[in-house]
Image (cartoon, rainbow, N blue to C red):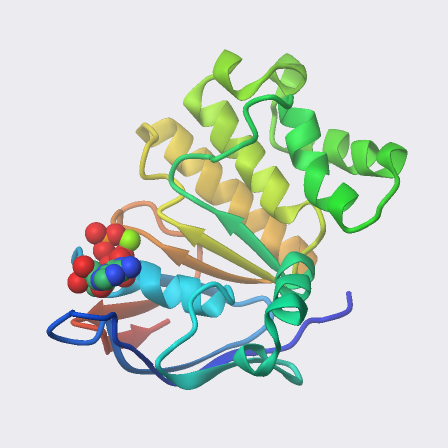
Amino acid sequence: MADRYSLTCYDLVVQFPHASRPALDGVSLVMSPESVNVIVGASGSGKSTLLMCLAGLEAPTKGRVVHGDVDVYRLDDRQRAAWRLRTIGLVFQNSELVPELTLRDNIALPLELLGTGRRDALKRADHLAEILDLGESSKRRPSEVSGGQAQRAAVGRALAHRPAVVLADEPTGALDTTNRHAVIGLLDDLVRAEGSTLVMVTHDEHTLPKNARIIRLADGQIMGDAA
Ligand SMILES: Nc1ncnc2c1ncn2[C@@H]1O[C@H](COP(=O)(O)OP(=O)(O)OP(=O)(O)O)[C@@H](O)[C@H]1O
Ligand SMILES: [Mg+2]
């Protein structure tokens, strides 16, 4: 498992133009490999902004994001895109799968983008589809499967290339209780098996991964941090 380094941010500040106060206001965190980090906080507290900064998708006004020896926002756009593709797996609230592709092909996609041959990419996709209990739905397109199946496929796609860091923004926000537990359990098992770092935003403090560290945000600042 290459690339298993701590993901660190130092004094992150994000000030959006015309906003009266910063969305992030001095956030520093160290998240180690194999750690499960959950970010909670009221709407507007900066959770998604923090996740996007960690993903290399939102350049902070101030501060740094560092993974191993990579200072993410010192990279130029092309280098950062390449780093992101290799290092980060993203899961959103609504699976955001490619509508034209089957679930299986969606899961294989990041691997193919990284240059893995189609055969091997599909082999890995089928393996994940089995773990994710997708059954026959794996051969169907997102519009032809349930929300829970689509979201499990989104988890598969995020993890297919064994990213060092998995970032999930309310991954169970659109699911019922049974599917919520299934998706959290799978995410948790898979990141632990791969030694990845998981950072997950949630509103649902009833469905948390085991032994999660809970980071509480309020008004762009860390208000609590407990294992
Ligand atoms: N692109 C943007 N331009 C201006 N302001 C923004 C932008 N994105 C977010 N904000 C503001 O930054 C603050 C933090 O937003 P963020 O989306 O990070 O909150 P959140 O904690 O994820 O909320 P929610 O739980 O509703 O998803 C909010 O006040 C929001 O209005
Ligand atoms: Mg959000």
